Image 1 (cartoon, rainbow, N blue to C red):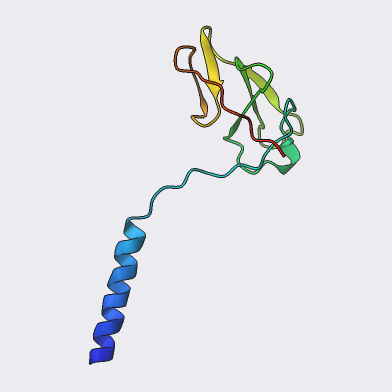
Image 2 (image 1 turned 135 degrees about the vertical axis):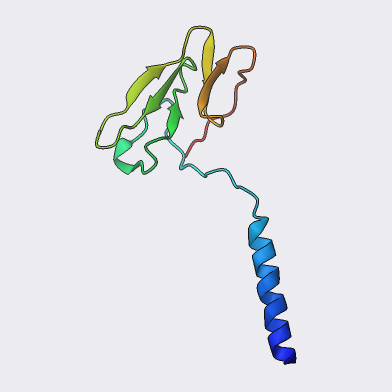
Length: 100
């Protein structure tokens, strides 16, 4: 009976711990600086890649495409990769790019 209580407490502890999991942002493989993303290895086709040389643009890799598409942010906006969206220039800030 004591063994069952220990197992039940352990199961309850695991359930509570898994319910309070902290959301970890996705880890992205680095890309060559100033390069288009390599769409052949991209698995997350919803992801947007920053254009290191021009923050008013970003890249997407549509499913089945070998080459990425360049997308321009709306006027007066720049792309923030960690937010995965374009923001007003007043909100934009330089973040060191992921490099190999």
